[in-house]
Length: 212
Image (cartoon, rainbow, N blue to C red; front, side, top):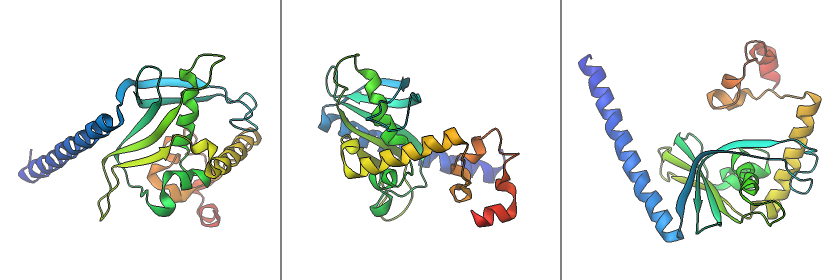
C-alpha cells in the first residue's frame, strides 16, 4: 500500500475502533440501568395492522427486520434498537424522532413499535414497548452529538402518534393509487439509489426535479 493510503487507513481504523468502544460502554450502561438484556438479533417480523392501529391499511402487511430486541425480563417489556453506523441526521428540537414521525418523515421507529405485536400471542394484549431507538455508532460531529435517538414506547398513544397514523394512511392510499412523489432532497440516503426503476424515473428530468 502507498504510505499515504496506509496512513489514512490506520487513522480511520483507529477512529472506528474508538467509536465502537465508546458505543459499547454507553450501551452496556443503558442495559444495566434499565434492567435490560438483548434477546434477539436480525429478526424478521410481520403483522397485518388492525384498522385501529393504521386506518385504511385494509389488509396491508407490515414487514421489517429488527436489528436488536432488548427485554426487561421474560415476556418484556421490550426496547427496539436499530443500528446506524454513521448517521448524518440531527435529532434535536424539530428533528427529534417523534416530531419527524408526526410529519410523516422517518417512519422506521414508529413502525417498529407496531411490529412488536408480532411477539405476542393471539388473543392476548400486545407486548409493552419501552422505546425504539436509533443507535448511532459514529454520531455526527458537532457540539452535541447524539449517540441515541429515542422514540418513546407510548408514541402511538400521543398526539404525535395520531398525526403519524394519518400520514401513514395517506401513504398507503397513495401506494394503492400509484402516487409516488419525487424527493430529490433526500439525496444518497433516500430511497432512490435502492429503487430498481431509478433509471426510468422522471427524477432525472431537470425541470421535474426543479418543480419538485
